[in-house]
Amino acid sequence: MIRALRAAYGLEGSLYQAHRGFPDTVTREEVFAHYRQGFGRELAEDLTNYSWGPETPGLRPTERALAVPDSVGVLDFRREHALVAWIPPTAFRQQWGVPRCLVDRMVREDGRWIIQARVS
Image (tube, rainbow, N blue to C red; front, side, top):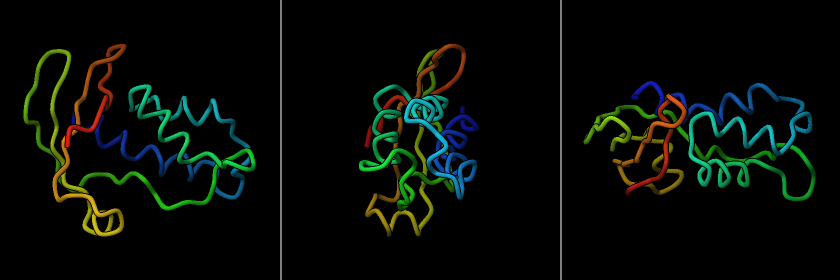
């Protein structure tokens, strides 16, 4: 589950890395499918909207909205859902004004863990 959380928060970086220099070679549907690997529908849609260029098709140049956590702890674990607390990197916290600790709700979907929602 912790690996899944870290992988999900690395999806933005891997998306931009894969299309570096060619941001218009990916479709909006592919961006959404990429984020769905680690996030629920609503969060994947939000991330797609953030990454997708509003005027021209393709990835837009932007500040990163995701950061791989420095530290992760499981607060509550059940068979199909969990609460996971994590500490974002200092530079990311300062850039976005987020608290020192964030909590996400994770659920099992199709046999894998995904981030369903931010709790705090």
